[in-house]
Length: 250
Image (tube, rainbow, N blue to C red; front, side, top):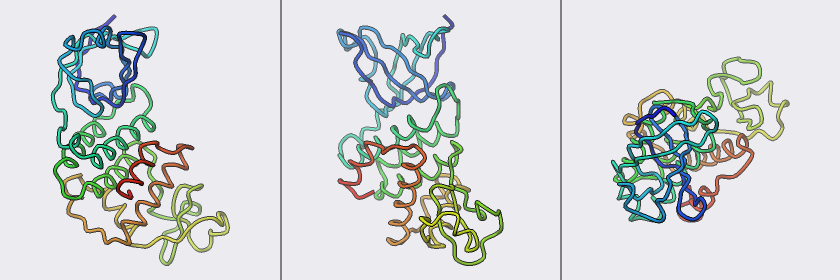
């Protein structure tokens, strides 16, 4: 089996048999991969990492040719993002991030931009006074980078530029103009400021988007649209999202 080394964030973990763990990682060089860490539950010092969710590690693994489960021989902690673990709200929001990556990304679909975004967002969320805003920024950029972004540049039906009022269609995946509104009677009105905010976040780097002002009305609509869009296209709720909504209303 070929051997590889890469940086990887832990998305989730689960027990396997009596002594081992199966861990899902999002790696810099291989995208989302799954690995088995044999014997770790019997010997916690076998790996130089606590194997905690959304921790950054350097892993060495033997790549299986016959399955998607690889053998991890080394896992060394690089960053545990400790500030996120001392606050329940921030911890849950970080869990939304890792669950969203798990749901959207196909196995071994490398995307280094998404990996770098994850590092920036988890670092910023632990220190920024407005982690809820960072979570919203992450959702927009994650949808864009993974190819799931809503169509907002023109009418998703006729492709005409939208000059006046428009509505947002979950089923069609974007804005519809007034003459196309009959194609989705459940489409909802959306503020121009919400559209402008999404487009700005899509087109600018993470650091620049932190300076974007979001008034409470725009922020509420932004979260409503994003959460409904994600749920519609995944065809399921994110479990951690429901917990976050109860805790911090995101």
